[in-house]
Image 1: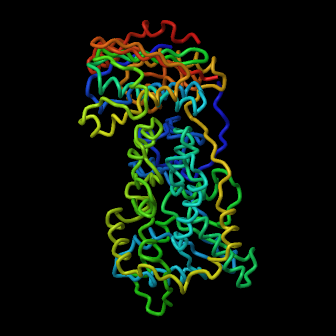
Image 2: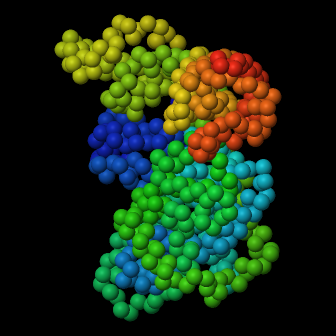
Length: 453
Length: 137
């Protein structure tokens, strides 16, 4: 079977000048999306879920996130910077939030709007959705876009457990646009720019799971803006106009692991970190854990402060946000709260805007659409796997022997890609045997009924 | 295709090995997600039953064109009253097993709910063989 044409796009890119083909990223990818070809890492777009694990682990800084050009902001008269609380968590507590925002304004933004401003409404949306779906026992938060995609490709039976609501930054973007339009701004003159802590959120903006349209004009990498703002803070620009923040203490904690689950009834599971998420999803799929209500899941360790574009150490950033939470008002948001918040018609509009009609499962494991054909392939794969050495050396350019077996039955690799099988001389035979012993089968043995389809 | 797995008494930590492997295979075969779920839930329950109650056993899984047959055979105490065991909430699980979150008496009823065919052969003092079939079509 030929490889499917790719239909999903991603923001993670490999820089071929830096990539050494060292296999580190390939071995850590949770969906087996990476292969080494021509000495470089190559990402299969249909399998990638934008979790950013490859970028975090790459020892050569060869993987990067493509961001929008900052100059794009110049195209708009109303330039809104959509700031997640994770961003202010990057800065030392001695810098006040209003100073950080002032720097963003000095960079050219006309308005600062906080993603977590709309947390109260997100809670309502989740609760409404859960009430409308009494047949579902476990609800998975749609907050982390990488989790949503991971479920689509690896845990397709759990797609109906995901709350079909878009991420909070989409809500904040819509509200600020409506607000500016109510104040007389023409829609085409408003550009909302989101500061992202990770690759998954860019992908969610650019290539959404189900609805095509987005109202975000551009996405800027958090490390890029951090550097700019940190420099300005360092120069302690005294004439900058302070900009008030509108976050409450619980809003600030929302992006941290556990910051979301604590607002809901039920078992309040909060799972963070790639391996933990994989493990928990596996258990949910087997119904080996009974989780009633909302399960918060974040691909990054500690939540968004562990994002690949977050500059500072996640534990330090967590402490900083916790510190700000103590300083911030526990409730009062009335002054900055949008006056139409309680208007039923407005709420209905928001609900409609935020709904995701469908999250489609798209299993990456399926070998063929036809069961009989898939069965034959699976049978052959099992035989091939037995013949391979099982040492997962990755010298074939696949992450494991099992992955190579799959590539062989899919027709994108050959049996003799395996260096154990393709031993050319007695010397290499002896060398391999001295390391791995007799469990490595001889070339002749391997040819039995494996290469036949 | 045939797969087999061993079950060790009291080894809850390893529970789910069989269901994980089977789950992976069914995903490769493109079996519809609800059918995968039914299969895996039933297999996991049966595996836990054997771990909790029996002295060890074996799981045999056969997959062919439209169905999966899972046979969980244990050497164990057997089930003295099968009708009672099939009732929701009825359990003979030890307090230790219950402490681990198992033994709520939902095992066999849950297996029945998730499978298309269920056959239980049991003999007190000898063991229990649970044969579960799920049709994919």
